[in-house]
Length: 174
Length: 287
Image 1 (cartoon, rainbow over the protein chains, first blue to last red):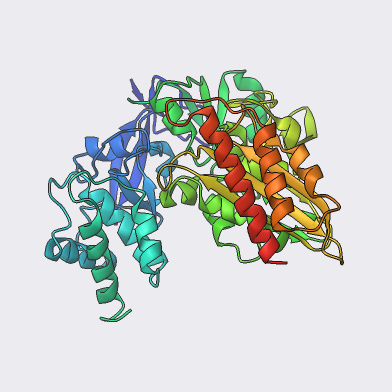
Image 2: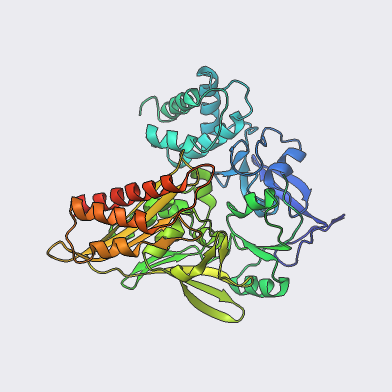
């Protein structure tokens, strides 16, 4: 295994090589050595950032959702090498963004989780939505939340929590 | 599962991407948003030798409207189409179809070129491209060629693209005056693969009769298909409840869906009748 300090824009990263990447996670630089086939989710988890969960590993469940340049992505459908130079935000973010902070409180108050496996994905999905579309209507919020699966709550408490967080972020009305 | 091993490279221009593709051989693939290819890798249904990452290439993400029509760059994201307020009237089906693709995070990253090149029989945008008589512009080191959307799809997950060819743009010709379009689909849950879909474009004369109708169907064959008999039932006729029903019936009768564990052939055929009727009824009301 070679740690090449690889520049993937000027030479092939071969299947048996590792690239040295600086990922920017929650405002901090995180160095990872990964092969091309390593997903962004695995790269984060292998560096101890296990707040990002892996459910299906094929883009169906949304548990691994994080923010990439402010927008929600499934980190199992993104290669770690593709995230080079992007700003990443995960459920561990401390201090949290405005949106993530409000969502954490609202999930607690509205009992928007039971087993908790899907929670970090829902938090990041909703954080991305509330930042990008602060005035999203209830139907839009519901539609966006349909991207992720929750097997415990039935989803309604999660919807309530996200709408409550949105009210808080919009100054108590909307 | 984890993706199988492959070589990876991120070129900085289309020309460089094409040169790399020509060198890397027939098992190389381009990756853009990755929203279709990454699941195929995880399921080990695809084992490319090389991935050429075009996701951030400049110049391929433009959506341009002019007198000649609409040009959609290969890297235009579904969410961009979904949110573009210019996509009304003749272009509305594009916007409606994009809004129904997968889920929000998928639409933020998935691309027009990726959806077309992936060629899933239940995909939305290929159906719209066929209904709107779009032309796909593809490039390789050997040059550029234009392929009508109706000739582009070769089967489930198959196109006529050579391995070293890159789809760079879709060109939608300017429609006749008073053209409008609609897209309808049905799937079991939000974001699921649709059982059946239809894209309809209609232009009408001053007297309200249909000058040109284009009806394309998805999910009922290996590739998007045109419902020619349904189109003929409308052309020259006024849009009435009776002509709408006649066209919807002909669309259903003229397609040959196959059944699977999720939806039988009969059910898919009934869906086509309902979806075509819904699309045409909306266009009728909006006259």
